[in-house]
Length: 429
Image (cartoon, rainbow, N blue to C red):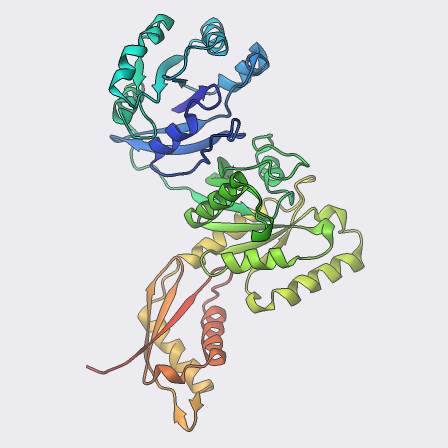
């Protein structure tokens, strides 16, 4: 079931959304119109599952014409119409109610937000005049009556949905205007994410579902990342924080780079440095259709990327075009492969055999003292972490650590995923 949160700007829709999902997923700011995209999230409450959708606030009458409202509301099974308890019912809100009742046969819960004080209850009688059967008075900021609202929502769900299969979460990151939103729209064949030549069109991390080869994926569009010195306002700063949270919450990161600029920038390199230690990363070179016919330019561009990223030459690079849809399906194939490596757990036996082979081929000593690796274990996955027990941690040199990392990576084909090596002193039994 899909539940839509609708209402005017600044009535607390995004705060309510964040409260329901239990995290700060959407930027909340006193500036009107901070939410400019619709945001979705799956919610499980008392063994019942539904999708909650936050939407941009309706600002004036032109936003609630019949055509706009039809395309806006038709997909929702249940509507949460949010109003502000501290303000009188506005003409825009009366218009929303009238249009919904005239056109749709939708279940609606009227949610009166910002009822923070005891005396507010005496001011709320006018909302009953709207004639809604279900009215809930809440404070999204303080969590008041949120459980009551959730109970009313699931009372409208007739099928119990359990064992929901988790989606592979793919986050699209990159600088502003490199085509992140356009790529997602092209994959979906629908203008789901807002696209504009104006920078910072995307502010929140926007989640949508996509299918490929009968598998479902969650695609996450994010705000463009820029250098710290260029962050001039709070909303932009909060957008970057939202992007970082989306990266941490994802399984795979797709870094979009604009091929039409004919170079990979220092900001791109810094973004990769942020990503590659914590998440599998796939480089997607977008707008490849603009330079693919220029063979010299294309070859120079590939060489430039390889040179600048030689410190992480294990990262997969694909060439795509959101305009022609060239290469977009490769994103799913490479994401699946990367996640398998990210989640892979080696057996102790195969790891011991490999370690013996590595060490015999390239023993290491420093100042006449040999490094002895007594054992190695894989502690965790996502990312794979390997712990080496050695005779002396001080003997570990960066170059030998890189040798061991590359040996594990190429022997067991850990491409596209970070692997972490740790060294501990072995004290014996």
